[in-house]
Image 1: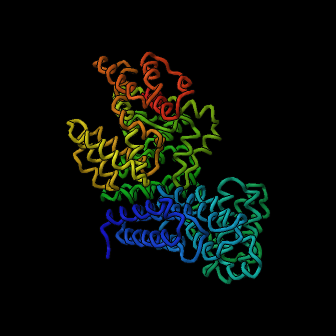
Image 2: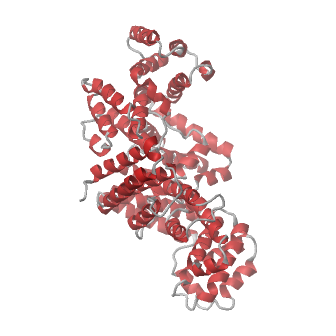
Image 3: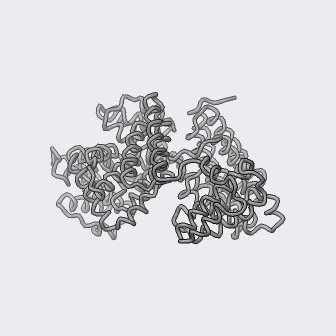
Length: 582
């Protein structure tokens, strides 16, 4: 029987939540069939052309399996998960928005499968993960590939001969990854090993494993040149046994900056065609590949434009994705460094879509955010430009963006501090906290009777039930959509809200008033006193009210809450962060 997609996803996550309960997680006979059923549900979701949802679910299954008791065994969910991943991906690369998550989970799963030296991993797992590693970007897949190479290097010669193609593929991928990261001296011996192992097995460039050998030779020749070994490169490309090699290398695709730039333009044109056809997902995927080609070309101006292109396409697919703001900011930073026009108003609009929040205030954090996209190395460019100069450019971009939308951002910040504790509670409930779910429902029920928050309360209740696709049809206004988008981002871990803020949900409504009082925009200041008095009389938030009053009076030192309980400090930090960004 095939479940409807949303029903299958909801059922699968319910199974995972059940597995994480202490009485189940310690009993393989209880969690094994549940995980197996979750894998089948993921396969059914993928069969209905919902690839990203299915991949995300499979990653959750692998993570849940790692948290269960007992060593990996044959009757395990790990192998079916990995094979289902391969089925879903087919001939396609891992979607760029999931590239980092897939790489991280497979790396963690690999550690779980082996002993401390990773010598006990079954070759079937190595082969499967190696196949998936080929579909990952170099920067995200590097830790996984390094571990896989560590494993095959420890095999005896008989096992290496038995699995020679897999060993050569992994070593080649490892060498190319090292070369792409600028570690040419380390890449050369790895690629030399690959070339030496494959050359005796190749009778013609057009036959297996000819393509793999050509790739290794091309990367090795380039590495030789970059370290000044031009004669070694020349001998590799035109020495004995190289007849027909140049023509075979040309067939593998573009390599010069001009060719790669043209490829980026072509991919962007295809992305625009996909957007016009209404296929926003495909458009975002193509735009991500275009940005990767921009980076491969090494052209700074093209890279700056590529970030802008990608953000423009992504916002149509995921209008509230934090990556939209990050890529626009990256584009503007590069524009500032290159003395090109910067799209500051677009950054301001993207800030509004994040409810006035961001986590990209430093060049390091901005690099970590945009480098999640496969093939992007923004952090490396900033290091070359100089961190101090780059940080000055970023500070100016964010300052000007905030100034362009200050009034709207202040309004969004007031709503954000009012709803963030509720979002933290929803995440806990979705992750299996059975006590939290009814509390959230009761809290949202109060707002379902109001005029201003009726639609948002209904939408958040649907997210709580893992029906976020339906949540967007609740008659939301602009502010509702931004807050719902923030909730979806938190649930899918694109952004982080401290889980301890959930305990503040019962008093969250007062935080909007406090924030407006801090900013001097509270229309009826007398409304605040009675609300704070109620909190103080409850006895559950000792020390909070005096700190709130100090914030209203103009104090901004975070150390004022240093000696208070952690949940009180988190509330003060939330309000200070909102005041700083608006």
